Length: 346
Image (tube, rainbow, N blue to C red):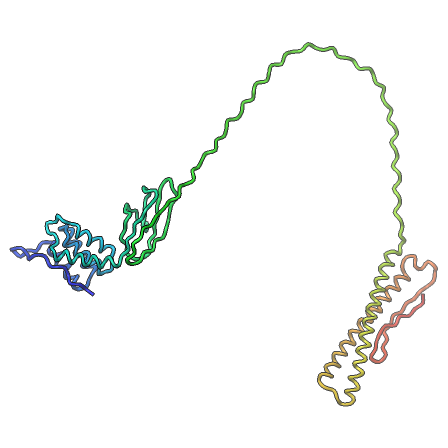
């Protein structure tokens, strides 16, 4: 809410002409009464530039308070109270008014005192260098930075709240000195002692040595010939593998066929009696698939047995007796059961 504006200056001197100072004061009072705080501050500041003194500074401080620049208002109002030798000092009422506004402004500011070590470090607040160490700040966040040639740069965030008073210590860390490595000069080798000449010594002539006759080199023993395992070894191993696979496949297919045939007979009797269910019909279909699988296994087993028998008969060295051999493998079925029949002469 707007406060009552500062008192107007003294009446215009005789002659009716107003000085620039008086015009600035009248304009400032008018803007203050209209709650135009920025315009009022500018007009009071212009008046203070024309005639510096505590009275226009009083108006500046009140305008700053109204626009919520509380830290600046405290600074200006305190300066107005401290001026004692002005040609136009504050009267008792004006001084009491300034003290009242100053007390109100102090409720909305924070007082911060910074202690920096080393003391001659440069201090920056929000990027602006300052020589101050005690501050009156509006509430908010600030960026502190301290620099010194012999110390590491220090940065710290500062958050102040209304009515807060605090002391902050900024202790800078010394830089690690860079020590240049000292390389010793290369060692100079000592001079070699002089070599004295020696008298020539008579040389002895060695007696002739008879040449040794080389002995004949020993002939290496002949390497043993590799054992012959016979041409039929590989065929024998492979044929037994086929024989084993055939037995397993025939046995598996036969067991599956036997089980499937038993289940099929039961289902067939049940369906002949008209008692088949959907699950029974599904089981019949699954039995047909199982029968096909068992037939396939038995066919594969019979084929493997046939291959094994053929390898035994026709392997190298297996028919040296001059006898002829024949082998015939045929599928055979008996009702629901199928298999493989092998026949031949050996």
